[in-house]
Amino acid sequence: MKRLILIGLVALGTAACANRTERLTASADGITIGLEGNEIGDLTEATDRANVHCARTGRIAVLEGVSELDEQGSVARFNCAPR
Image (tube, rainbow, N blue to C red; front, side, top):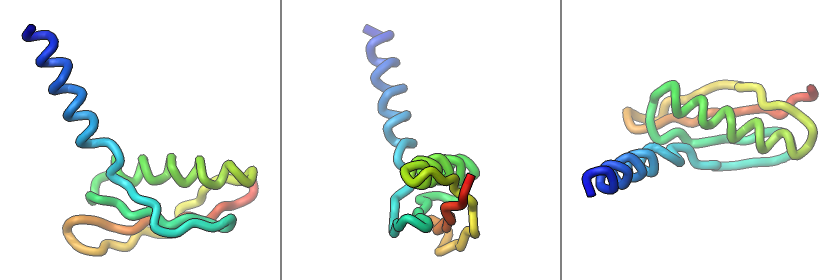
């Protein structure tokens, strides 16, 4: 029973940390992603999402810049560049 509760808590914690990024705008030329927090892990997740987006057109994501909105989050802008 304790093991089942522990597994449930781990899954809940993982779910709470997941999806800390949100696509704001996207086109064939790039993508803008909102970051819920201001941590490196959030930017890593955003970069992964941007690479998936750009790969649809055979390109890779290149970070253009990050703008801090407030203490709660930022916006990352990526261009889709040729490989």
